[in-house]
Amino acid sequence: MTIGDHLQEFGGLPAFTFPDAETDAKKKKKSVVLPEPDAVAWRLSVETYDAQETWPECFARFLGAVDTTKITALIVGTWDDVYGNGPDEVIEALCAAQDRLPALRALFLGDIVMEECEMSWINQGLVTPLLETFSGLEVFGVRGGQNLEFPAVRHERLHTLVVESGGLPADVVRGIASSDLPALAHLDLWLGTSEYGGDSEVADLAPILSGDRLPALKHLALRNSETQDDVCAALAAAPVVARLETLDISMGVLTDDGVAALLSGQPLSHLNVLDMHYNYLSDEMRTRLRDTLEPAGVRLELDSDDADEDSDEDDGTVWRFVSVGE
Image: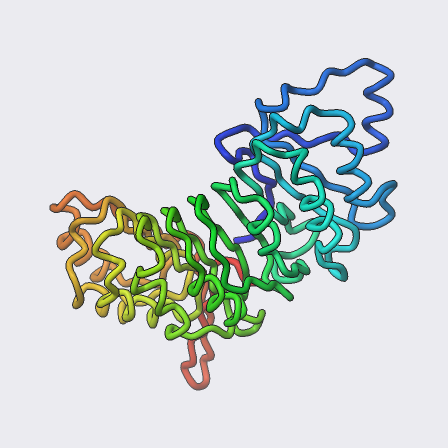
């Protein structure tokens, strides 16, 4: 699977792309009216190469065209040369405009699709200044793990945190796991593969699995991992599972071994949803899951989707792949 489409909705609102400089100039001649500031999630993006303006310049034009005091959701798309540059200037511009965005509740950094830059080649940077600056944020999303930095932070109101990556660095996992997020109800981490920088181990997830810093957590996704079986084995005894409503272990290299370990641990019958879509499970294991959990009302997502594997005819080695790598 690849990410081929931009966000269509964010923060409970339909996404709308703010016109680029050339389009904006043409629209002004036609007196085109922009949406109401609080009616959409505004997406700001510039061409990766040969852009007429930088992202901060686009943002400055945006500040002059829209009543940003009413904006609740903002999406950052591509900035100049996402292969080579991180979003430092983007983050600096956003933080400097804090007083212009008093109602901001949802922010996504890096709504970048494959034709613009493959996910694992997106350069990120130190993103926690956004959380430190915007204390009212309830939803925060980041795409791309290369050079991503996320030291431990405390945020009182954050409800949803999503980090999409083909390889999430261990120090990022540890930073998120050590953060104090008392209102966080939805955590979604794409752990990825070592080939693209995903060098975390299950031990790095320990504070998340204990749930001590996440008293409000109801939805936990630890997915897109090449070590999905190990993650499942750890979840089998993780205290946080007992108070979850949704557990998502999809998109990774999940086999019968991981599911058997999960089922041998604490009961899962309290879950509303157990999501395992994209997997390498046998028909026998799918049947066992249905027989064990569906009678209790757990909704199972077991579709193998396009899970792909390859084997060496000479020595029998089997290679399996996560859903989103590069």
